[in-house]
Each structure stands twice: as C-alpha cells, then as structure tokens.
Length: 466
Image 1 (cartoon, rainbow, N blue to C red):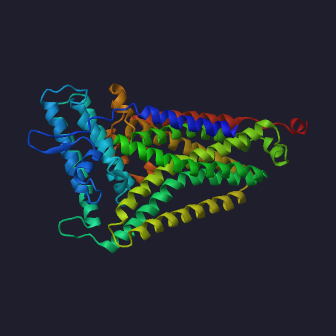
Image 2 (image 1 turned 90 degrees about the vertical axis):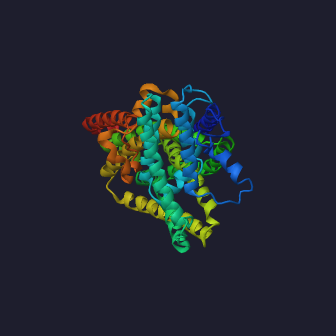
Image 3 (image 1 turned 135 degrees about the vertical axis):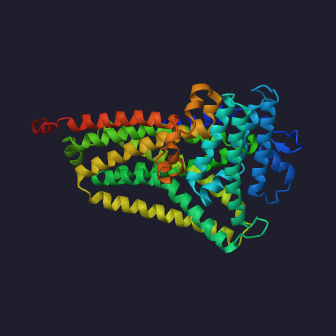
C-alpha cells in the first residue's frame, strides 16, 4: 500500500511537470521601449546577455531596473492599443515581471532570508493587484499607480540588499556582518520551513510510542527519509525546468498540489485521533489488538503523512540554499556561513523533534489524543492556505483562469495588515479570498466534526469485552 502511495506521488510529479510545460515560456527576447530603455522578458535572457561567462555580479538594483523597464514596456503596449493576449500583447510583460523575474532572479528568496517572509507576501500581493488592474482594463493612471507602487517596493528592498552585500555606490556593506546575516538567513529558513514538518512527524512518533506501537514508528521514519531523497531529486528536476523555461512555475505547482494532498491525509489522521480521545476503543489498542488490516492501514497513513509533510518543504529548502551558495563566494567566510546555517538549523529542528517526542509521551493519553488531533487539524488548515497561495498566486493559476478567480487573488483592503505578519504567513493565512474562503469552509467542517466526535458516546464495557 505504501509503495502504491509513493508511486502515486511520483506520478503526480511527472504530471505536474508536463502540465507546467504547457504554460507559456516564450517571449524571452529583448527589445526597447519608446524611451530607448532596454527590456528583457526574462531574467534568464538578461543574464545570458550581460553575463555570458557567469562572472559578473548582478545587483538587486540592476534587477529592479530591468523589472521596471519590462513594466514600462507593458505600459507602452497598454496605452498604445496593443491586444491583451499573445506574445506582443500588453499583458505578457506585466505577467512575466513576477514568474520570469522576481522569483527566477532569486530576488524573492533573498528578501525572504535577509528581510522577512512577510515582506515577500506584501510584494507578491502588489504584483497580483497590479495584474488585476491590467486585467480589469483600468485607466492608464490607475495601472501606472500600481506599477509605481510595486517598483518603489522593489527599489526599497534592493537598496537594503545591495547595501548589505556591499553593492551600494558608497561600499557601505559590511562583509563580516554579511556573513552573520547569511548564517541567520539560512538558519531561519531551515527552522521555518522544517518546523511544520517536524511538528507533524514528532507528534505522530510520540503517538505511536504512547500507544505501545513502537514498531509503527518505522513507517514514519521511512516516510521522512524517502521524502528527503525525493526532495533532492525534485529539486534537481525543478531547477532544470526553471533554468530551461526561465520561470519558477513548476516548483510552485508541485508545492501547491503536495500541500493540498497533505490536507486530505491530515484531516483523516486528525479525525482518527479525535475519535480515540473519547472512545474506549483505545484500550483495545493499548492491549495490543492492532493486527487487523485497518490498523495497519492507519499506520501506513501516518507514514504517508510523514512523507508529504517533509517532501512539501524539502525541495524548496534545497532551492533556497542554492541561492545562498550562489552569493557565498562574494563574501568573507560566505560558505562557512551557509553551511553553519544549514547544520545549525538542522540541529534546532532535531532538538524540537526530541522535545515533542519526550514531552508528548509524558502527557496523559486522553489529553494527548485531543492535543495531537487539534494540531493536525490546524496544520491541515495551514497547508490548505499555503497550497492555494502557491497554486493560484505563485503558480499563476489565478492569472491563467482570470475573471472572478483573479478578483479573489488580491488583497482584501480591510485585512491588508495581515500581509506583514510572519506568524500568520507560517499558518498559511493571507489577506485574500482565494485562500481564506477554503480555510473558513474547512474550519467549519473541522469544528462540526470535532463536536460530533466529542458527543459520541463511548462504547460500553460489555461491548468492549466481547
């Protein structure tokens, strides 16, 4: 059964990669707008033109300059009567500015590491708002305002990063401080991305040990190890596709679908655990009567959950670290800082796992079942939000579908403050209807399910003895 599930995930990978290849990846040529500014439709094409040998340092202000030039080309087409679609249409430059530039150039990952993840969310929402104004055929002044706001945000981040890296004109970057900043960035990414997975894996291992089914932990560990191996393979595949296509769409789609698949499994595991919190069935479980196929299937489900939780973050972490290795050679002790951040982050995640396992086993059984089932429910809601974000926002499905769906993928004005909150982002909570509506629906279903489970009468002692 476990092999079939792993084979299913492998098949999903291949299907996603094939689907990702269907997204437009052309329109990579360079040109000039009416003001003579050189623009490139992708960072890949720009880098090939200005740095064919791979030896030039491209600053973040240079990247911002090129994104600005591309958006200016979009404005020129928008106001010049160009059609909306097609390679020469006005929408293409506005769309490419994100997937073919902001993400592919490493700008997004560097901001997340050296500034904050919430800042990335703010910028991504501004990209979405800008594209929405174009899709809605707003006036040129409205679109211009959204473009200027976006470029201003990118310029602010570029100034911070270039100063940190010593790329600024006054050479104000501090090489020693940069090494420590790099260590902190990589450390933070490992802990942040690994925390969701380790919470789930640690809780499941503690659960199996607590219910005297220690042998079942093997499936959880195997699932985690297989996920790590699969993450390496997937990172190589995604990096290859991103390099060839010039955009990051395959990565976002893979992460989004994996997250949504994990939601289904987490809901199943959560409901299973909450049912044991109020039922006398757990006494049979403790007595060793767990050899039937149903219980074996549940243990395999835990292993599959472990695989999904670790795999969801694994490939992304590897791609993040690759970006930091790229910049490490330009700073003193750069590689030491990156490796230190990786191993320090892994040590912190391992410590969190040990604490969950040790203290989880010491919690009385009934409260433990309740707490673990609630944790799984919360993580399922978090995965649903982040999965929808990765598919519709980062993966571009909202733009591809357009219309009402795209309207749901922009900031809700009253909730704009949420985009600057790292804790909310960790739990997949964003100020957009495209993420909040599915989460609210799942929350209602989860609460109803918990109420029903808690009101269910436990089996009588006589039935238990039969």
